Length: 164
Image (cartoon, rainbow, N blue to C red; front, side):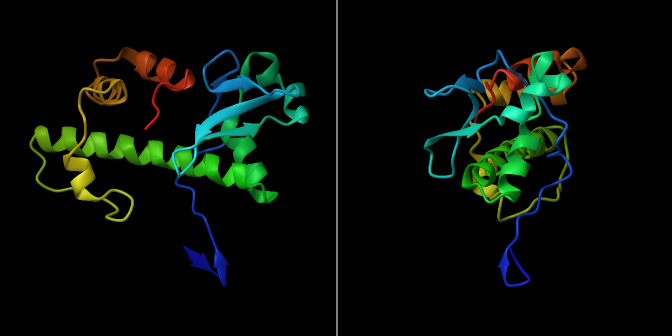
């Protein structure tokens, strides 16, 4: 959206900077010249890398094997790095997909209405969800309460298995 004459990105309440991924998970990789990066897929479907800043390595989370990936992306985006903006877009797409999965399950349970953003969640895309995919099945298990404490969903998320 445009605000004050320039592009402005809104981040929803479920995209918060305390989320972590595991350093040993699929989302983190080594960079050829040294260092580490977060893997993601940009809006054009190309693989992307968001470098993990050296200053992060001194944090308690990093020392315990976790990295606050959205914090890194937000700081990078605020500093003007396109990789930070693309990573945030990648995460928002995942949130939108989880919302679409929820809407399908709610309709199957008898809901006859719902509130959606028609721009980010076109109804045709929601109606055509591939229910055989692992991300959909994990989301369904979580939303229906069959994944105790969301352990399977969170494990898959941290390993980067919920790509959309």
